[in-house]
Length: 189
Ligand SMILES: [Fe+2]
Ligand SMILES: [Fe+2]
Image (cartoon, rainbow, N blue to C red):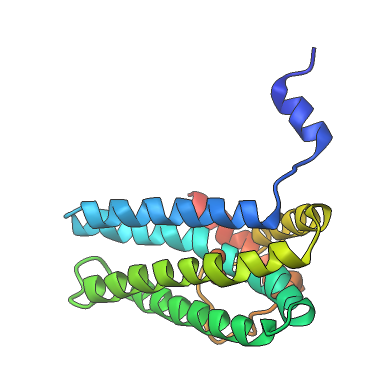
């Protein structure tokens, strides 16, 4: 008799893009709670780095899969996508600044606190404006298909900030894929 895992794999994932985005947001929020509860600088720094490895591929996949659909298929979607993309670029710049610091840097806490606040706000805005618009516009089947595309995009997206690189589809270019694979491996060591 096949294991539960084998059975669920053979039937494919039924997660919609909205389900996956919400799960990712919850995971990030849990990390931010741990960040706030810790008073040890090294620990806080490590939590921010963990958040980076989760969040940057998530944002990159949104820019590759979610926002093009929003711009093309939803009335007023371009303005919403522009605002959210700007927020994502702001967070990426903060990750870059933090990457150039260490936990004892005098600016670390102010940069990390700002990052936590901005990312929380960004995730809430997506949940309030982006996901409902998407669910209204697309069928369940389409949303599941987008969920699969989203997972694929995440797995080949960079985990380190590249604030000056062209964002959309960075994981699709050969150079972007090689860099992303190296970064995923580095994060596991
Ligand atoms: Fe986002
Ligand atoms: Fe998001």
